[in-house]
Amino acid sequence: MSHIVVTGGAGFIGSHCCVELLQAGAQVTVLDNFCNSKPEALHHIAKITGICPALAQLDLCDESAVSSFFAANSVDAVIHFAGLKAVGESCRIPLTYYHNNLTGTLHLLRAMAENGCKTIVFSSSATVYGMHNTAPFTEDMPTSATNPYGWTKQMIEQILMDTAAADPDWAIVALRYFNPIGAHPSGLIGENPNGIPNNLVPYVARVAEGTLERLSIYGDDYDTPDGTGVRDYIHVVDLAKGHLCALEYAKTHHGFEAINLGTGNGASVLEVLHAYEQACGKSLPYVIAPRHAGDIATSFADPQKAKSLLHWQAESDLLTMCKDSWNFTLQQHP
Ligand code: NAD
Ligand code: UFG
Image 1 (cartoon, helix red, strand yellow):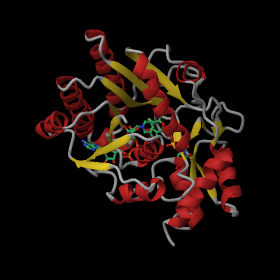
Image 2 (spheres, protein in one colour):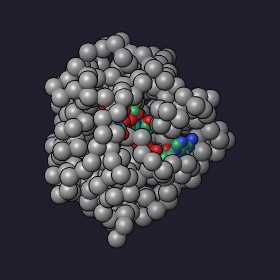
Image 3 (cartoon, helix red, strand yellow):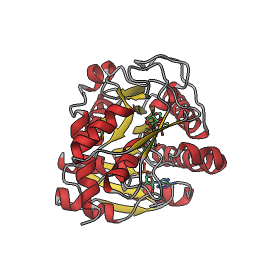
Image 4 (cartoon, helix red, strand yellow):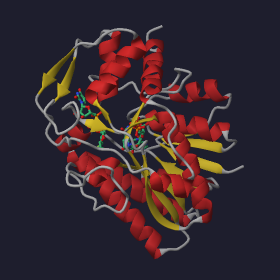
């Protein structure tokens, strides 16, 4: 049985990945400092799978803790989700973002290398496609960033590429996620951000449950079919499954590979809102607001590389994603 360490395994995507790993028979250790999650996530994973993952509660920025962990444990591969992810916050406190995301990753890679564990799957983002490419985005397009969060993803990809180039024993897959939404069908794990959500679907969920009054749609004058922004929404369970395929791929392919995880389909803000209305059975109020600085009109993946290298493709449609989000939201207030 392989031993997989999941950094950030208590978070939104990491917890879904732990479920898939445990259900596939892996031994899982979650490495998390709970700066954006709660230990209860592990209980929920245990409820779904019947197995509680092991926990190493530590901060990746604590070099000696990370190094002691890898010295004391035999680890086959790491899936590295841990990081700070709020774009707006990253502009306000860039040094915190660079420190947490970059220093944490450097400590992790060094501890792995020192202990002979050289397989890692990294959470990158479609944000690396920047403002100047035209969708569908393919992995060979030039990458860039428009905010400190995006730069951390771009820089970590570079660090991983250089690491793989210097030592052919490394097997590294950077997965570029498009827009993960939805929740586990059990309704036990999902995305429940503190405060007012930044992202579309968590915001719409709050409007549907009545804790926020209405959605502000950031711009209806984009060059898109209905004028609102288009994104490639992907069910978080589909996304989690993609990580298992990436681990499988890394067993037989060394070097560095960046791979999109998206559906290949774009949906507009209005389409998402209408799908959510169908899922929750109510009409949801909205207003049109000004465009959000830094937003692009259209983002969606070319999912071909994931299909051919990982033998993976997304399965859920938008309505299923919204239904699972709503099911999770209802279970937050039993
Ligand atoms: P999340 O905030 O729910 O999960 C991140 C987890 O990492 C949290 O449990 C947090 O406590 C932990 N963490 C953060 N810094 C840490 C540190 N220094 N040491 C130990 N643990 C630490 O976020 P998520 O949505 O699950 O995202 C997971 C990863 O995927 C992130 O790297 C994120 O940037 C990336 N990503 C997310 C999205 C998205 O829309 N959710 C899109 C593209 C990429
Ligand atoms: N939107 C609204 N109103 C809101 C929130 C969002 O109209 O209250 C719109 C946005 O303008 C965009 C779409 O809904 O057109 C999706 O917005 P999200 O914030 O959910 O997602 P983004 O694509 O803007 O951002 C996501 C991640 C970022 C990542 C980026 C690029 O949240 O971390 O994808 O990969 F950098």
